Length: 115
Image: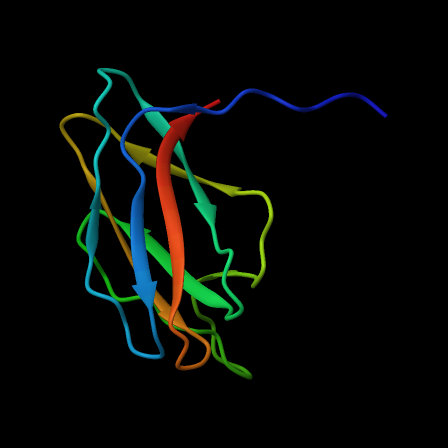
């Protein structure tokens, strides 16, 4: 099998969201380096699954339910971050919102990055 690992380079500060079973207010994802940020590294070390939404306007995240689509779900007890593609730059900050599958709380971490 080919080695597909690449270095993750942060392009902005990590933000933490304390997530419960109601939608968390939008938090800005700011790139501080003057280059394109094409991913967000997400980590959920807590015991509760969390749905996240990354957008330009801070649209509230929703959990998928039976027959109803929702947003990307981070599994609980993650040991390594997942990379979600996005477009964030110095002139176009992104926003992240999240909602937990249960009351929690659990803390998730989001870092703008490039690979």
